Amino acid sequence: MRMLPVLALAALAASATAQDMPASEAAPASLPPAEELPMQGTRYYAVPPKFEYPVAALQAGIEGRCNIRFTVDAEGVPQDVSPDCDHPAFVAPVLAGMARVRMIISEEVVAGERFILPVSFRIPL
Image 1: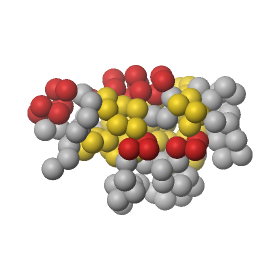
Image 2 (image 1 turned 90 degrees about the vertical axis):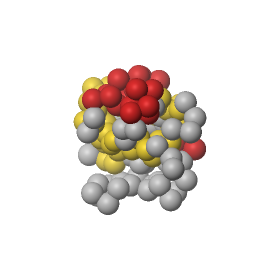
Image 3 (image 1 turned 180 degrees about the horizontal axis):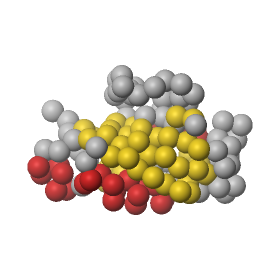
Image 4 (image 1 turned 30 degrees about the horizontal axis):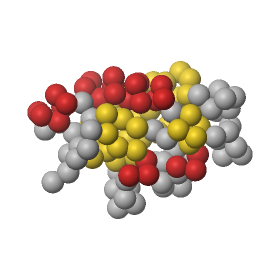
């Protein structure tokens, strides 16, 4: 299983994308580095991930992480998307965001292979 770039989502705007994230918001230490693709891997996406921060979670001050497991079909469309989130408020925005993602099939992104995309929802100070 390959690891895709880590996204740390900020609540300053209504949404965030992979290219909006500074490198300083790297993967949490608890995530295994094995087979991790480079940080800020927007080159892997024809349409990069974009996840809306749930308003109710933002208002309640809830932050969280999701590990999104999925495969990619020959057209670069994520299939079998399975989010494992530490708070249920993040599941729906992850599923909606992944429905819009399109990946670029290459030597690094192989159709049919399983991937994991770790995502963090963080409220900026």
